[in-house]
Length: 472
Ligand code: ZN
Ligand code: MN
Image 1 (cartoon, rainbow, N blue to C red):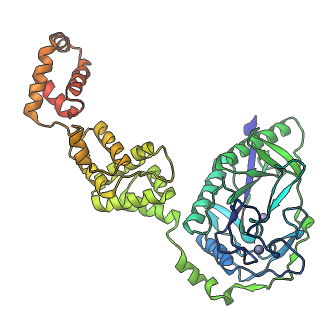
Image 2 (image 1 turned 135 degrees about the vertical axis):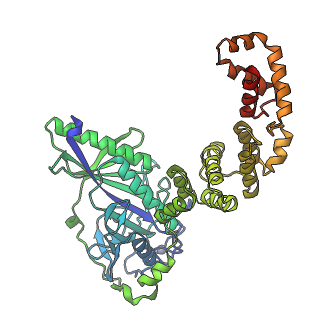
Image 3 (image 1 turned 120 degrees about the horizontal axis):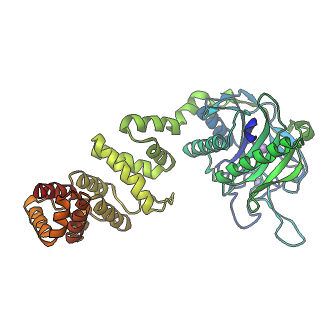
Protein backbone atom coordinates (compact mmCIF):
# COMPACT_ATOMS: atom_id res chain seq x y z
CA UNK A 1 0.00 0.00 0.00
CA UNK A 2 1.21 3.42 -0.96
CA UNK A 3 -0.07 4.82 2.31
CA UNK A 4 2.73 2.91 4.04
CA UNK A 5 5.14 5.42 2.59
CA UNK A 6 5.67 8.96 3.61
CA UNK A 7 7.30 11.72 1.58
CA UNK A 8 9.66 14.29 2.97
CA UNK A 9 10.22 17.44 0.97
CA UNK A 10 12.61 20.33 1.21
CA UNK A 11 12.37 23.23 -1.22
CA UNK A 12 15.06 25.33 -2.84
CA UNK A 13 13.62 28.42 -4.42
CA UNK A 14 15.44 30.98 -6.53
CA UNK A 15 13.97 34.42 -7.22
CA UNK A 16 15.38 37.14 -9.44
CA UNK A 17 15.62 40.40 -7.55
CA UNK A 18 14.32 43.62 -9.05
CA UNK A 19 17.27 45.99 -8.94
CA UNK A 20 18.46 48.70 -11.32
CA UNK A 21 21.72 46.97 -12.15
CA UNK A 22 23.12 43.46 -12.03
CA UNK A 23 24.70 41.83 -8.97
CA UNK A 24 28.38 42.60 -9.61
CA UNK A 25 28.50 45.00 -12.57
CA UNK A 26 26.76 48.11 -13.91
CA UNK A 27 24.70 46.35 -16.61
CA UNK A 28 20.97 46.97 -16.47
CA UNK A 29 18.96 44.19 -14.84
CA UNK A 30 16.54 43.19 -17.64
CA UNK A 31 16.63 39.38 -17.68
CA UNK A 32 13.61 39.08 -20.00
CA UNK A 33 15.06 41.31 -22.74
CA UNK A 34 14.40 39.57 -26.06
CA UNK A 35 17.38 40.86 -28.05
CA UNK A 36 20.29 38.67 -26.94
CA UNK A 37 23.43 40.02 -25.29
CA UNK A 38 22.60 43.72 -25.14
CA UNK A 39 23.00 43.91 -21.36
CA UNK A 40 26.39 42.31 -21.04
CA UNK A 41 29.90 43.45 -20.15
CA UNK A 42 33.28 41.82 -19.43
CA UNK A 43 32.34 41.36 -15.75
CA UNK A 44 29.06 39.49 -16.23
CA UNK A 45 30.55 37.58 -19.15
CA UNK A 46 33.31 36.39 -16.84
CA UNK A 47 36.35 37.73 -18.63
CA UNK A 48 39.61 37.12 -16.76
CA UNK A 49 41.04 40.09 -14.88
CA UNK A 50 37.72 41.84 -14.30
CA UNK A 51 36.68 42.93 -10.83
CA UNK A 52 33.12 42.43 -9.47
CA UNK A 53 31.53 45.02 -7.16
CA UNK A 54 28.73 44.10 -4.72
CA UNK A 55 25.28 45.56 -5.45
CA UNK A 56 24.13 47.16 -2.19
CA UNK A 57 20.48 47.25 -3.23
CA UNK A 58 20.45 43.48 -3.78
CA UNK A 59 21.96 42.84 -0.33
CA UNK A 60 19.37 45.16 1.25
CA UNK A 61 16.52 43.34 -0.53
CA UNK A 62 17.60 39.94 0.77
CA UNK A 63 17.91 41.40 4.28
CA UNK A 64 14.42 42.85 3.90
CA UNK A 65 13.04 39.41 3.05
CA UNK A 66 14.91 38.06 6.07
CA UNK A 67 13.27 40.63 8.36
CA UNK A 68 9.84 39.90 6.90
CA UNK A 69 10.09 36.16 7.65
CA UNK A 70 11.60 36.55 11.11
CA UNK A 71 15.02 35.25 10.10
CA UNK A 72 18.35 35.93 11.76
CA UNK A 73 20.27 38.50 9.80
CA UNK A 74 23.97 37.80 9.62
CA UNK A 75 26.42 40.33 10.86
CA UNK A 76 29.41 38.84 9.07
CA UNK A 77 28.86 37.61 5.54
CA UNK A 78 30.96 36.74 2.52
CA UNK A 79 30.62 35.54 -1.05
CA UNK A 80 32.00 32.21 -2.23
CA UNK A 81 32.87 30.69 -5.55
CA UNK A 82 30.82 27.63 -6.45
CA UNK A 83 32.95 25.88 -9.03
CA UNK A 84 31.45 23.95 -11.92
CA UNK A 85 31.68 24.04 -15.67
CA UNK A 86 28.79 24.87 -17.95
CA UNK A 87 28.62 27.19 -20.99
CA UNK A 88 26.11 29.46 -19.25
CA UNK A 89 28.70 30.30 -16.58
CA UNK A 90 31.94 30.90 -18.49
CA UNK A 91 33.91 31.99 -15.42
CA UNK A 92 33.87 28.38 -14.37
CA UNK A 93 32.18 29.31 -11.10
CA UNK A 94 29.07 31.03 -9.81
CA UNK A 95 29.44 33.67 -7.12
CA UNK A 96 27.18 32.49 -4.32
CA UNK A 97 27.21 32.24 -0.53
CA UNK A 98 28.09 29.11 1.36
CA UNK A 99 29.22 29.27 4.97
CA UNK A 100 27.87 32.71 5.80
CA UNK A 101 24.47 33.28 4.22
CA UNK A 102 22.83 36.68 4.71
CA UNK A 103 19.86 35.16 6.52
CA UNK A 104 19.39 31.99 8.51
CA UNK A 105 16.23 30.49 10.00
CA UNK A 106 12.87 32.25 9.85
CA UNK A 107 9.50 30.79 8.99
CA UNK A 108 6.87 30.91 6.24
CA UNK A 109 3.49 29.12 6.48
CA UNK A 110 4.79 27.27 9.54
CA UNK A 111 7.69 25.78 7.62
CA UNK A 112 11.15 26.51 9.01
CA UNK A 113 13.68 28.05 6.71
CA UNK A 114 17.28 26.94 6.70
CA UNK A 115 18.74 29.96 4.96
CA UNK A 116 18.33 32.74 2.45
CA UNK A 117 21.39 33.79 0.50
CA UNK A 118 22.38 35.93 -2.45
CA UNK A 119 24.04 34.80 -5.66
CA UNK A 120 24.19 35.61 -9.36
CA UNK A 121 21.98 34.18 -12.07
CA UNK A 122 23.56 32.34 -14.98
CA UNK A 123 23.30 33.17 -18.68
CA UNK A 124 20.54 31.52 -20.69
CA UNK A 125 21.47 28.82 -23.15
CA UNK A 126 19.22 27.76 -25.98
CA UNK A 127 19.54 24.63 -28.08
CA UNK A 128 17.01 25.46 -30.79
CA UNK A 129 19.45 26.23 -33.61
CA UNK A 130 20.42 22.98 -35.37
CA UNK A 131 24.03 22.09 -34.75
CA UNK A 132 24.61 24.90 -32.26
CA UNK A 133 23.91 25.99 -28.72
CA UNK A 134 23.53 29.72 -28.18
CA UNK A 135 24.22 31.67 -25.00
CA UNK A 136 22.44 34.93 -24.09
CA UNK A 137 24.09 36.95 -21.32
CA UNK A 138 21.24 39.37 -20.56
CA UNK A 139 20.38 37.23 -17.55
CA UNK A 140 23.97 36.52 -16.50
CA UNK A 141 24.79 38.19 -13.20
CA UNK A 142 21.22 39.17 -12.31
CA UNK A 143 20.92 39.15 -8.50
CA UNK A 144 19.29 35.95 -7.37
CA UNK A 145 17.86 35.21 -3.96
CA UNK A 146 18.04 31.56 -2.95
CA UNK A 147 15.85 30.28 -0.13
CA UNK A 148 16.19 26.79 1.31
CA UNK A 149 13.64 25.21 3.65
CA UNK A 150 14.12 22.53 6.24
CA UNK A 151 12.97 19.11 4.96
CA UNK A 152 9.70 19.19 6.84
CA UNK A 153 7.06 19.37 4.11
CA UNK A 154 4.99 16.22 3.64
CA UNK A 155 2.55 16.84 0.81
CA UNK A 156 2.28 18.46 -2.60
CA UNK A 157 -0.35 20.89 -1.27
CA UNK A 158 1.85 21.99 1.58
CA UNK A 159 4.74 22.57 -0.83
CA UNK A 160 2.58 24.59 -3.21
CA UNK A 161 1.12 26.67 -0.38
CA UNK A 162 4.61 27.45 0.83
CA UNK A 163 5.77 28.54 -2.61
CA UNK A 164 2.65 30.67 -3.14
CA UNK A 165 3.12 32.37 0.22
CA UNK A 166 6.76 33.11 -0.52
CA UNK A 167 5.73 34.56 -3.89
CA UNK A 168 3.24 36.83 -2.12
CA UNK A 169 5.84 38.01 0.38
CA UNK A 170 8.33 38.80 -2.40
CA UNK A 171 5.65 40.77 -4.26
CA UNK A 172 4.47 42.63 -1.16
CA UNK A 173 8.07 43.62 -0.43
CA UNK A 174 8.44 44.60 -4.10
CA UNK A 175 11.77 42.79 -4.25
CA UNK A 176 10.82 40.43 -7.10
CA UNK A 177 7.96 39.96 -9.55
CA UNK A 178 8.39 36.26 -8.79
CA UNK A 179 6.45 35.06 -11.84
CA UNK A 180 7.12 31.34 -12.21
CA UNK A 181 6.04 31.14 -15.85
CA UNK A 182 8.58 33.84 -16.69
CA UNK A 183 11.32 32.12 -14.72
CA UNK A 184 11.55 34.97 -12.21
CA UNK A 185 10.88 32.42 -9.48
CA UNK A 186 12.14 28.84 -9.82
CA UNK A 187 11.20 26.04 -7.49
CA UNK A 188 13.33 22.96 -6.98
CA UNK A 189 12.01 20.08 -4.96
CA UNK A 190 14.10 17.70 -2.89
CA UNK A 191 11.97 14.69 -2.19
CA UNK A 192 12.58 11.40 -0.47
CA UNK A 193 10.14 8.60 0.17
CA UNK A 194 10.39 6.06 2.99
CA UNK A 195 8.41 4.09 5.52
CA UNK A 196 7.61 5.97 8.72
CA UNK A 197 10.75 6.29 10.81
CA UNK A 198 13.10 5.31 7.95
CA UNK A 199 15.24 7.51 5.74
CA UNK A 200 14.74 7.70 2.01
CA UNK A 201 17.11 8.72 -0.77
CA UNK A 202 16.98 12.35 -1.77
CA UNK A 203 15.99 13.08 -5.37
CA UNK A 204 16.06 16.61 -6.72
CA UNK A 205 13.47 17.80 -9.25
CA UNK A 206 14.26 20.79 -11.47
CA UNK A 207 12.61 22.55 -14.46
CA UNK A 208 9.37 23.28 -12.64
CA UNK A 209 7.77 26.39 -14.08
CA UNK A 210 4.37 26.67 -12.45
CA UNK A 211 2.74 25.87 -9.12
CA UNK A 212 0.67 23.23 -10.88
CA UNK A 213 3.78 21.61 -12.29
CA UNK A 214 5.30 21.59 -8.78
CA UNK A 215 2.29 19.71 -7.44
CA UNK A 216 2.24 17.26 -10.32
CA UNK A 217 5.98 16.62 -10.13
CA UNK A 218 5.75 15.85 -6.41
CA UNK A 219 2.80 13.47 -6.88
CA UNK A 220 4.59 11.76 -9.75
CA UNK A 221 7.82 11.36 -7.86
CA UNK A 222 6.05 10.04 -4.75
CA UNK A 223 4.42 7.35 -6.84
CA UNK A 224 7.61 6.53 -8.76
CA UNK A 225 9.70 6.15 -5.61
CA UNK A 226 6.99 4.23 -3.71
CA UNK A 227 6.65 1.81 -6.64
CA UNK A 228 10.42 1.21 -6.72
CA UNK A 229 10.50 0.55 -2.98
CA UNK A 230 7.47 -1.75 -3.15
CA UNK A 231 9.27 -3.85 -5.76
CA UNK A 232 12.28 -4.07 -3.44
CA UNK A 233 14.39 -1.81 -5.68
CA UNK A 234 16.29 1.21 -4.47
CA UNK A 235 15.96 4.87 -5.34
CA UNK A 236 19.03 6.45 -6.91
CA UNK A 237 20.25 9.80 -5.61
CA UNK A 238 20.00 12.03 -8.67
CA UNK A 239 18.66 15.16 -10.29
CA UNK A 240 15.54 14.72 -12.38
CA UNK A 241 13.77 17.23 -14.60
CA UNK A 242 10.02 17.74 -14.82
CA UNK A 243 8.86 17.14 -18.39
CA UNK A 244 5.61 19.03 -18.91
CA UNK A 245 4.76 17.23 -22.16
CA UNK A 246 5.25 13.77 -20.70
CA UNK A 247 3.93 14.80 -17.25
CA UNK A 248 6.84 12.88 -15.78
CA UNK A 249 10.22 13.41 -14.16
CA UNK A 250 13.16 12.33 -16.30
CA UNK A 251 16.62 11.45 -15.00
CA UNK A 252 19.14 14.20 -15.81
CA UNK A 253 22.32 13.54 -13.91
CA UNK A 254 23.74 12.16 -10.71
CA UNK A 255 23.59 14.74 -7.96
CA UNK A 256 26.78 16.58 -7.00
CA UNK A 257 27.57 16.91 -3.32
CA UNK A 258 28.60 20.24 -1.84
CA UNK A 259 32.26 19.14 -1.78
CA UNK A 260 32.21 18.63 -5.56
CA UNK A 261 31.79 22.38 -5.96
CA UNK A 262 34.95 23.19 -4.01
CA UNK A 263 33.45 26.32 -2.47
CA UNK A 264 35.93 28.94 -1.30
CA UNK A 265 35.61 32.65 -0.45
CA UNK A 266 35.83 34.84 -3.53
CA UNK A 267 39.11 36.75 -3.18
CA UNK A 268 37.85 39.52 -5.47
CA UNK A 269 35.08 40.59 -3.09
CA UNK A 270 35.29 42.24 0.33
CA UNK A 271 33.83 40.59 3.43
CA UNK A 272 30.73 42.41 4.60
CA UNK A 273 30.03 43.53 8.14
CA UNK A 274 26.32 44.16 7.92
CA UNK A 275 26.07 46.39 11.00
CA UNK A 276 28.57 48.80 9.48
CA UNK A 277 26.17 49.78 6.71
CA UNK A 278 23.45 52.22 7.73
CA UNK A 279 20.79 50.90 5.31
CA UNK A 280 21.33 47.33 6.55
CA UNK A 281 20.56 48.06 10.21
CA UNK A 282 17.61 46.11 11.58
CA UNK A 283 15.65 49.18 12.64
CA UNK A 284 16.07 50.80 9.26
CA UNK A 285 14.93 47.64 7.50
CA UNK A 286 11.91 47.33 9.80
CA UNK A 287 10.81 50.82 8.82
CA UNK A 288 10.67 49.71 5.19
CA UNK A 289 8.45 46.69 5.80
CA UNK A 290 4.96 47.11 4.31
CA UNK A 291 1.87 45.33 5.65
CA UNK A 292 2.64 41.66 5.00
CA UNK A 293 0.13 39.10 3.69
CA UNK A 294 -0.52 37.56 7.12
CA UNK A 295 -1.00 40.96 8.74
CA UNK A 296 -3.43 41.90 6.02
CA UNK A 297 -5.38 38.66 6.48
CA UNK A 298 -5.86 39.33 10.19
CA UNK A 299 -6.84 42.93 9.59
CA UNK A 300 -9.43 42.12 6.91
CA UNK A 301 -10.95 39.46 9.13
CA UNK A 302 -11.05 41.75 12.17
CA UNK A 303 -12.31 44.86 10.41
CA UNK A 304 -14.82 43.35 8.00
CA UNK A 305 -15.60 39.82 9.22
CA UNK A 306 -15.67 38.40 5.70
CA UNK A 307 -15.09 34.80 4.56
CA UNK A 308 -11.55 33.38 4.37
CA UNK A 309 -11.96 32.67 0.63
CA UNK A 310 -12.88 36.31 0.00
CA UNK A 311 -9.87 37.45 2.02
CA UNK A 312 -7.57 35.30 -0.15
CA UNK A 313 -8.88 37.04 -3.27
CA UNK A 314 -8.01 40.43 -1.75
CA UNK A 315 -4.62 39.19 -0.53
CA UNK A 316 -3.71 37.94 -4.00
CA UNK A 317 -5.11 40.80 -6.03
CA UNK A 318 -3.97 44.18 -4.82
CA UNK A 319 -6.39 46.27 -6.88
CA UNK A 320 -9.41 44.23 -5.98
CA UNK A 321 -8.43 44.34 -2.31
CA UNK A 322 -8.10 48.10 -2.47
CA UNK A 323 -11.47 48.40 -4.19
CA UNK A 324 -13.12 46.20 -1.55
CA UNK A 325 -11.69 48.30 1.27
CA UNK A 326 -12.76 51.58 -0.33
CA UNK A 327 -16.27 50.25 -0.92
CA UNK A 328 -16.45 48.94 2.65
CA UNK A 329 -15.33 52.21 4.17
CA UNK A 330 -18.17 53.84 2.29
CA UNK A 331 -20.82 51.24 3.19
CA UNK A 332 -19.79 50.91 6.86
CA UNK A 333 -22.61 48.44 7.71
CA UNK A 334 -21.29 44.86 8.18
CA UNK A 335 -24.23 43.23 6.37
CA UNK A 336 -23.78 45.52 3.38
CA UNK A 337 -20.05 44.85 3.39
CA UNK A 338 -20.61 41.09 3.25
CA UNK A 339 -23.09 41.56 0.42
CA UNK A 340 -20.58 43.74 -1.44
CA UNK A 341 -17.85 41.16 -0.93
CA UNK A 342 -20.07 38.43 -2.38
CA UNK A 343 -20.72 40.46 -5.48
CA UNK A 344 -17.02 41.30 -5.89
CA UNK A 345 -15.71 37.79 -5.38
CA UNK A 346 -18.42 35.74 -7.09
CA UNK A 347 -19.90 37.97 -9.75
CA UNK A 348 -17.10 40.31 -10.74
CA UNK A 349 -14.60 37.43 -10.88
CA UNK A 350 -17.06 35.59 -13.10
CA UNK A 351 -17.33 38.58 -15.46
CA UNK A 352 -13.58 39.00 -15.73
CA UNK A 353 -13.17 35.24 -16.25
CA UNK A 354 -10.72 35.42 -13.36
CA UNK A 355 -8.25 37.44 -15.37
CA UNK A 356 -5.92 38.52 -12.58
CA UNK A 357 -5.08 41.85 -14.18
CA UNK A 358 -8.51 43.34 -14.29
CA UNK A 359 -11.05 41.83 -11.96
CA UNK A 360 -13.01 45.06 -11.78
CA UNK A 361 -13.51 46.00 -15.41
CA UNK A 362 -14.90 49.53 -15.60
CA UNK A 363 -16.84 49.37 -12.33
CA UNK A 364 -16.28 52.47 -10.24
CA UNK A 365 -16.47 52.64 -6.46
CA UNK A 366 -19.43 55.06 -6.32
CA UNK A 367 -21.54 53.13 -8.80
CA UNK A 368 -20.81 49.86 -7.04
CA UNK A 369 -21.76 51.27 -3.61
CA UNK A 370 -25.02 52.51 -5.12
CA UNK A 371 -25.74 49.10 -6.65
CA UNK A 372 -25.22 47.32 -3.32
CA UNK A 373 -27.60 49.73 -1.59
CA UNK A 374 -30.23 49.17 -4.29
CA UNK A 375 -29.95 45.40 -3.85
CA UNK A 376 -30.27 45.74 -0.10
CA UNK A 377 -33.51 47.74 -0.15
CA UNK A 378 -35.06 45.22 -2.52
CA UNK A 379 -35.17 47.42 -5.60
CA UNK A 380 -33.39 44.73 -7.58
CA UNK A 381 -33.72 40.99 -7.92
CA UNK A 382 -30.39 39.15 -7.79
CA UNK A 383 -30.85 38.34 -11.48
CA UNK A 384 -31.38 42.02 -12.23
CA UNK A 385 -28.40 43.03 -10.10
CA UNK A 386 -26.16 40.66 -12.05
CA UNK A 387 -27.33 42.12 -15.37
CA UNK A 388 -26.66 45.63 -14.17
CA UNK A 389 -23.25 44.67 -12.84
CA UNK A 390 -22.39 43.24 -16.24
CA UNK A 391 -23.35 46.53 -17.91
CA UNK A 392 -21.29 48.43 -15.31
CA UNK A 393 -18.35 46.11 -15.93
CA UNK A 394 -18.45 46.85 -19.65
CA UNK A 395 -18.97 50.63 -19.47
CA UNK A 396 -18.70 52.65 -16.27
CA UNK A 397 -22.34 53.64 -15.77
CA UNK A 398 -24.80 54.55 -13.02
CA UNK A 399 -26.69 51.39 -11.92
CA UNK A 400 -29.91 53.33 -11.37
CA UNK A 401 -29.89 54.62 -14.94
CA UNK A 402 -29.25 51.11 -16.26
CA UNK A 403 -32.00 49.66 -14.04
CA UNK A 404 -34.53 52.18 -15.31
CA UNK A 405 -33.51 51.67 -18.92
CA UNK A 406 -33.85 47.92 -18.67
CA UNK A 407 -36.96 48.07 -16.49
CA UNK A 408 -35.18 46.17 -13.76
CA UNK A 409 -36.44 48.08 -10.73
CA UNK A 410 -38.46 45.47 -8.87
CA UNK A 411 -42.15 46.19 -8.53
CA UNK A 412 -42.90 46.40 -4.85
CA UNK A 413 -46.19 48.23 -5.33
CA UNK A 414 -48.81 46.08 -3.58
CA UNK A 415 -51.83 47.39 -5.52
CA UNK A 416 -50.12 46.70 -8.81
CA UNK A 417 -49.09 43.21 -7.70
CA UNK A 418 -52.66 42.45 -6.54
CA UNK A 419 -53.88 43.27 -10.05
CA UNK A 420 -51.27 40.96 -11.50
CA UNK A 421 -52.28 38.13 -9.14
CA UNK A 422 -55.94 38.53 -10.12
CA UNK A 423 -55.02 38.46 -13.80
CA UNK A 424 -52.91 35.31 -13.51
CA UNK A 425 -55.43 33.45 -11.35
CA UNK A 426 -58.25 34.42 -13.72
CA UNK A 427 -56.35 33.08 -16.70
CA UNK A 428 -55.44 29.76 -15.07
CA UNK A 429 -58.55 28.32 -13.36
CA UNK A 430 -57.37 24.72 -13.78
CA UNK A 431 -54.07 25.39 -11.99
CA UNK A 432 -55.91 27.22 -9.21
CA UNK A 433 -58.18 24.21 -8.69
CA UNK A 434 -55.24 21.81 -8.55
CA UNK A 435 -53.38 24.05 -6.15
CA UNK A 436 -56.37 24.20 -3.81
CA UNK A 437 -56.66 20.41 -3.89
CA UNK A 438 -53.13 20.16 -2.55
CA UNK A 439 -50.69 20.48 -5.45
CA UNK A 440 -48.62 23.17 -3.76
CA UNK A 441 -45.72 22.83 -6.16
CA UNK A 442 -47.80 24.97 -8.55
CA UNK A 443 -46.73 28.01 -6.54
CA UNK A 444 -43.52 28.14 -8.58
CA UNK A 445 -45.59 27.93 -11.78
CA UNK A 446 -47.51 31.08 -10.79
CA UNK A 447 -44.28 32.88 -9.85
CA UNK A 448 -42.83 31.92 -13.22
CA UNK A 449 -45.84 33.35 -15.07
CA UNK A 450 -45.63 36.57 -13.07
CA UNK A 451 -41.89 36.98 -13.71
CA UNK A 452 -42.49 36.46 -17.42
CA UNK A 453 -45.35 38.96 -17.40
CA UNK A 454 -43.16 41.61 -15.72
CA UNK A 455 -39.98 40.68 -17.62
CA UNK A 456 -38.29 39.79 -14.36
CA UNK A 457 -38.86 43.15 -12.76
CA UNK A 458 -41.03 41.73 -9.99
CA UNK A 459 -40.05 41.15 -6.39
CA UNK A 460 -40.94 37.43 -6.23
CA UNK A 461 -41.17 37.37 -2.44
CA UNK A 462 -43.83 40.09 -2.32
CA UNK A 463 -45.71 38.37 -5.16
CA UNK A 464 -45.72 34.99 -3.36
CA UNK A 465 -47.06 36.54 -0.19
CA UNK A 466 -49.98 38.25 -1.93
CA UNK A 467 -50.72 35.22 -4.11
CA UNK A 468 -50.99 32.96 -1.09
CA UNK A 469 -53.46 35.36 0.55
CA UNK A 470 -55.66 35.09 -2.56
CA UNK A 471 -55.46 31.32 -2.67
CA UNK A 472 -56.38 30.75 0.96
ZN1 ZN B 1 27.68 43.29 -16.87
MN1 MN C 1 21.56 28.50 -6.29
